[in-house]
Structures are given as C-alpha cells and as structure tokens.
Length: 97
Length: 140
Image 1 (cartoon, one colour):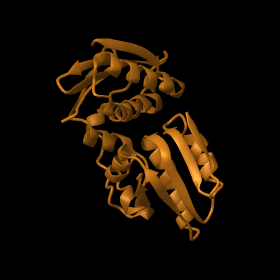
Image 2 (cartoon, chains in turn cyan, yellow):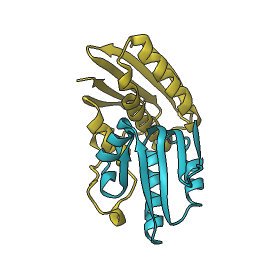
Image 3 (tube, chains in turn yellow, blue):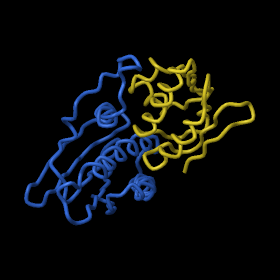
C-alpha cells in the first residue's frame, strides 16, 4: 500500500511501496505540488521503475517552472535504485540517518 | 521449483505476487535482505508481460512464478504462456547519465534488473508461445 500527503512541516510525505499498482495515485498527488518541494522518503520502503517515472515526470515539470523536488530520508535500498538509475545526477538526495 | 504460484497477467495481481514472494523467500530460508531486490526484478518482468506480452493471445495470459533456494540466495523462474517473443535480456541499454531534459522513463526497469541480479536467462518456446525468464540473486 502507499500513502502520500502533506506532513506537518509542509513536506510531502510518502509511505509504503511506490510500485506499478500505486504509481497513478502518486502521480495524481504530485501533479498538484509546485515550487521547491521536499519529498520525505523516510517511510518509503520500495520503489520500482514505475515509481521512478513518477518522480522523473514531477521533477521535469517543477524544474520547468523554477521549482525542484528534493528527496530526503532515503533508505539504502531505494538509494541504490536511485543511484543505478542516475537519479543522483538529477535530484538532490539525502539518505536516512 | 520448491514453491510456485500462478497469477493472472493483470496489474491488480501485483499485491498477490509481492505477498507470495515474501512468503516464498521465508519458506526457502533465504536472506530477507534479498527480498526488495527480488521484488524489484519480479515486478519489472511481470509488468512487462502485463503491458506488452499478450498482443498475440486471444486467451487470458497467466504467469507462473517459481522460487528455489540456491547457495547464498534464490533462483526465480517466471513463465508466461500466450505471449510474444521478447528477450528481456536484450532490451536496449539506457544512458542514465543524460541530463534530465533528455531522460525518458521507458526501458529503465529492464535496464536496471541486469544490474541487480547475478545472472538472467531468457528462453522462448514457439509452439506454446511460452517465455521463461530465470534469474539468480545471492548475497555475494
């Protein structure tokens, strides 16, 4: 399952599994954000290429409008996937502490 | 295969596939740290069948997934009946160093799985229109 919404600090908080079955729901939410946006991935357990596509599409849209998506609290597995996909070149990423 | 289950080639079956994989790896006594990687590879292969595998078929496509422990890890076999011949091991490489303006999400999943597994093989049987992908992942 996937949960996505705004946290108390204004960041977008994503929890659970961002897979092919959940990608459309995540995209629908992220299509509503604008400007500099932090995506708190502390509770993001898993991401597949469908989820990577959601983040890439969102980053392209935000950057075209003077914004960007910053990814925080990324766990080791998800960070590895980001790195293999070259996302460390196109996102500001901070790992989980 | 020690444990196996058949799934309809529909996106809605993904949750059942994830549950089966978690149960199967535990049943086989496989290092649980391998689970997320096995999930990733299986999802990419399964959704590839869902999206592209059934153009030639008039009957619903099914996918059988089998799991078997091997020294230090797991061997997974994904068999799909009634699908076109598409060798996932020969999918084009993706240039992951391109700037964002030139990046496209398509093909990234099949590109990544080759990096994540120890080995991957593809076979296709014409009479049955049956594809069979075998991959291994170990802790090494």
